Length: 323
Image (tube, rainbow, N blue to C red; front, side, top):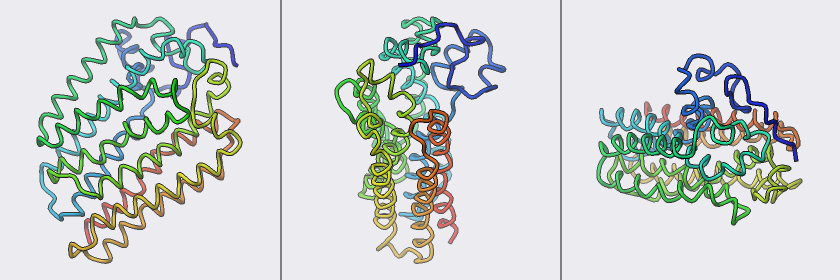
């Protein structure tokens, strides 16, 4: 285990944040600890929460062929909501993990274990973010509102999962990809097999990228008793990641076929949309070729590259809309 450096980072910076990020560089001093709780200095999590939402919205439009002006608000609302709910979820995670975080080198500089904010202050900040996100959710249809409220359950459970299962990444996937179904329902007003398959594809993708992420902390995690797929798979990580990659591509392809086939869709549009998950799969192959599970810097870099991984199918979905 790497002994946490108890010397505070300069200006309260978090150890694994981007160097020179906007929070450390320009946010008001009083706001920085709260923005760090929300991971505003690390935008990748917001991307990973938002992208399944946009997949779901795009696939819903491809399904019924009825784009509307309200879809622009669904997109914007999902973007704002992803930032807020990722922030609320991360704040909740830091509250529940405050003792663990203080024992791990990478996380000891986070606002709660480093003493920048109290647990009470963090709790109040979490509630503020969640209430603002609720105001946005209430502008959607009733079915989407119900789905948004139900989504709080996996969010609440996730921080505790690493205490009782070797598969906490599954619980992260359940929480992070809920937006694929919510955005579909916000557009159509009903559920369908297509967003369910898309949701499962997102969970497989989460298992892929968060296993890579978890390899950064596996030595510390082993000593403090935190479970993860990185520890479970160990040297067999690459074969498992290949399985998750295949599941991601297969399930997303099935989601596209379920959404578009049988509704008089243009075969060229269907083919272009299907190419999206396969191109996404090639990006995941590239990550596997670069992966070095014992190099934390490589793991963090590859984890962050999943913003581009998730954008790839969206580009093909957008192209299919114009055919």
